[in-house]
Amino acid sequence: MARVIVVTSGKGGVGKTTVTAGLGRALAKRGKRVVLMDADLGLNNLDVVLDAESRVVYDILDVVENRCRPRQALVEDLLVSGLYILPGASYDDGEKIGGQNLRAVIHALIPSFDFIFIDCPAGIEAGFHRAVAAADEALIVTTPHVSALRDADKVVAIVKSYGIKAGLVINRARGDMILGQEQLGCEDISELLQLVPVGVLPEDDAINTYNCFLTEENGRSEGDEAIGMLADNLLNGTTKLYDVTKKYRGFLGGIKRSLKRIV
Image (tube, rainbow, N blue to C red):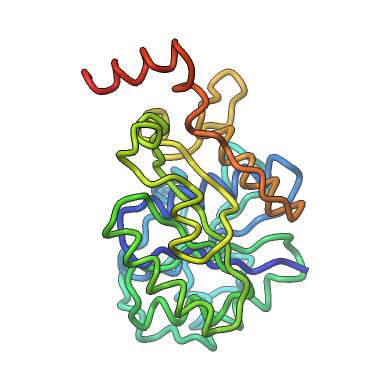
């Protein structure tokens, strides 16, 4: 039976979809069968991030309106076996897909998979509530920026009102800025949001370049290591976090911090 986890943020642009895609690939590489469901109807782009857009035949609206079965709408990832995408409907504003429809689709997929991630739309409008109500767990993604933290705080309160377990993912953390006290660290953010962190992901140029976390061993980056630790935490119930400050500590680390400021 699959664990159904909504990935939400409140604020757009914090990397929620990229985190969803990277986490799905990391878990599939660990032998799990994973579905990534794009619930951001009208502005869906999960298929684009995973380079599956050209292979989409059916989407979630086709499933809801009985033009295909849920399994028929799934698109398998070309890089990692066991990972599937359920595309969102880019031509619909979401009015035709209610919370009950979403739960029915998920219920049909649960017996065949280990994880179902719902990529939630930004904001706290109807689409957000539809996605959260269909989940059993939540990952709340935020960056250390003040505006993102303020929106995340609102989302935490709403998610808790649904009575589902929530974990915190801090994205785009800068170790050099944390050590320079220019950015809040993990403990500060956790205390502020009153939420246990299950993942800390660094600002990583490789992620920005390739849209998603790499999967080949010879192309591994800091982001790959961090997303792998997040996947392991979900699997094992642990809270081991990637240390974004480690390469900026000590004498050589101080030089790296200085160079970062210059660049």
